[in-house]
Length: 260
Image (cartoon, rainbow, N blue to C red):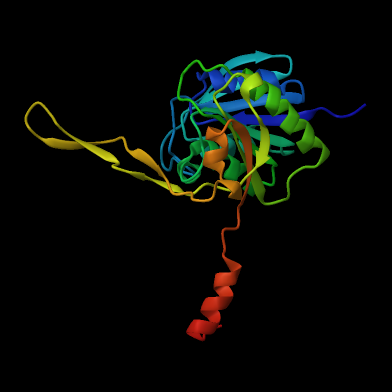
């Protein structure tokens, strides 16, 4: 009999988000699921750690094939906690992060706590996949994620992604029948502009509140840009490497600077 997978799930929207509870149920098809997720929302925390801060672990739910815990930390804290408490003797077969309420394309992939957890899982040698949907609604329709997510997971089981790579998958916020398909892509080009609003408090003190507008810098829609494909009704799959070294630039600068 084929061994059931051990699957670790986390997110950055908190244990109470619809996305992670939906994902936990979805992944029970493939194995035994352990959920360790932040007690409070942790969006934008990337790979942040909580240092010198007491963190409490709380059981939220348990049934056959599923156990769910909240942890008072970041997504990376949750992965580390799971590896040191629940998986001390054997690592999970798969880490899933999400389903994030909001897209993680372009520069958002650098800030994302959802993908920070995938980075941490990959560092532990766990195949890691992040799921995000292009809406910040607290109650999104996730049928598109379920349908196309299962297609992607079946392909992953047949041909896993390479070591030291994690997958960033974004789903359009559309009914399943309106999605055009799945595309491989690269991280989109873009940045945030007009990032702060200025406000005044009741005594006239000035403070800043982060808001911002996204500026898409992509000029070639045929290049496989993440942002344009999601907005164009495709599910996108972007493989990210843990090793961010630019080896061509290493060689160029070695010669230009005449150093070893």
